[in-house]
Image 1 (cartoon, one colour):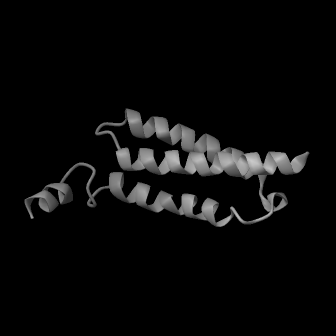
Image 2 (cartoon, helix red, strand yellow):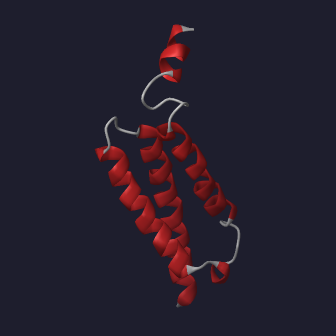
Image 3 (cartoon, one colour):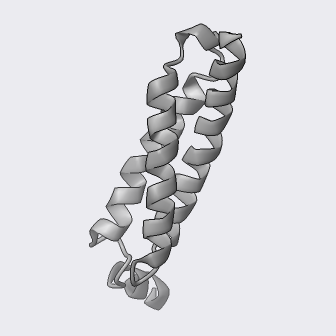
Length: 95
């Protein structure tokens, strides 16, 4: 019980945007994973590239902000991985 109370009131706990921001961002990862079975010609190269840049920027932010936001870092690292895979599928489909 003490562990839960400590987490609940921590600077990165569920009472803060440090918690709910990353939770909401998992939707990007879920959407990219849902598109894995789609043909590459249905992917947007521009949007996928933007998502790659966005996740790279926020990975750095999550590392530099105090307290470090590991939940945001993992979320954007996961999104970066999936988006890079989708971008490679899109690029191969262009040639």
